Amino acid sequence: MKILAVEDDPSAAMVIESVLRYLGHDVVLAATADEAFACLRAEPIRIVVSDWLLGRTDGLELCRRIRKGTLDYVYFILLTQREATDENEHLAMEAGVDDFLTKPVVPRELRMRLHVAQRILGYTQQVQQLESFLPVCSYCNKVRDDRNFWEQIEE
Image 1 (cartoon, rainbow, N blue to C red):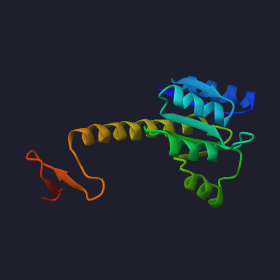
Image 2: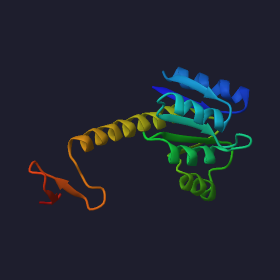
Image 3: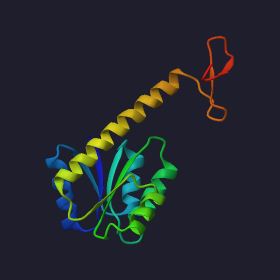
Image 4: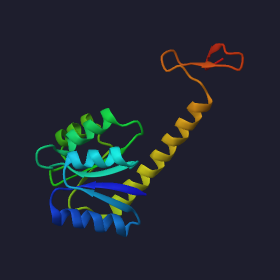
């Protein structure tokens, strides 16, 4: 799977890139949040692994921007040297982060997180396909039948 790795420290970027390649993924590197967002707009990448601290715009702001501006769901894993406190995890969740790992990255842990990300993205794609076959009103949760009448799902 193609993964966007966002890291402003060149040494750390090499480490995360080599770990992701070792795990069998194609990697696109970005050094800033703006560069990362441009990459996502240019090609369909569904997983982002980003450092929290990225200079002017941090990983949380990048995640917020992705949540506002993309049509397809992007799974976002935040990497940080910060301690995994309740406050830091809460800040990450509020920004829309899907997963939170502390540095240094342990390849086994990242492999498991990416496995879960791939399953979730697969289910997301299945739901989108089903929604295209079955017309559901997102406001009232009714389904349109073959005669073009709207019915409650339970019926």
